[in-house]
Image (tube, rainbow, N blue to C red; front, side):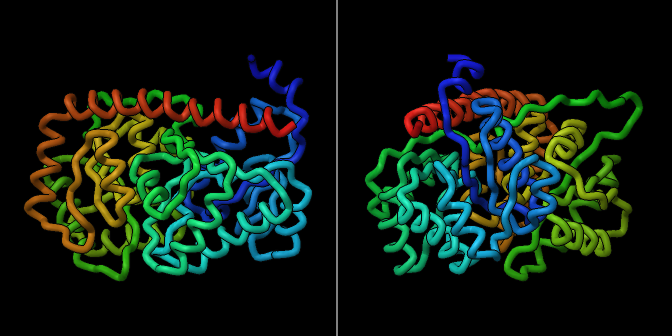
Length: 366
């Protein structure tokens, strides 16, 4: 069934999407962009309402209705009038960074089921869940979710370890269904480029010093080093902090770029050193080798999927090991590029499964 036939057959009119939207995090914005575009291809006339921290920004950029996550009355009304509720990707169900946000999202799931709505998880990450009460609440509520797809096997295993006995289908992050065009860049005579995308983590400072020395080391080897913030203004600040520790002069992207703009920027790199998951995902989409920096389990999980190396954990980063890994990738760049391109094609295929499952889900809810 093609998209035109599907749009004629499905009478669904209202879809409520929730996720970590409106916080100026480019990865989550990419998920929202891909999901809303997929829904509109399936059902051009549907009404989409997205939960967000910044309703003006979300409405302006994605052509959807948006409600503030802080307006509980509007959230309740939006869920009540929806036909289905979709958890639109990301690792929102975890308590490593916050139990408060976890409980907020669980409240949305509870509310949706209280109103008799069908709920779908769309390529979500999951966990870790460390607190006993959170584990019990999640086990109870997720068993009520109607369709579950997750972006990696570790997420599935964590769900199953909490007694979730629903069918859990492993697909890929929704971003892999994002359509984009790579704009050609002029490389003749230009320096090779290495991108660095970082985030703050638990007040740790030592890895910043090592990153500053690493950036100096690469610039002295005649690479252009470009710091690429993925969340504003937080990542811009850490990039500036590291720049202040350097003796050489890097390039720091100070403008807030949209997902497709960052993918295009990364496509001109020879290597990306990335800490945020979606910096690594964007590099995969662009076919650029990566060295990951682990701050959560989702990073090590993803590096295994794309067959790319870890430079180490943020809390215990070792400079000698880190530089050795970087040199290995730069020396054998073509091999690592072949690996990431191969992984990209597999992940795109898995992301297309998300869309097929979404179509089936919506069709059954006529």
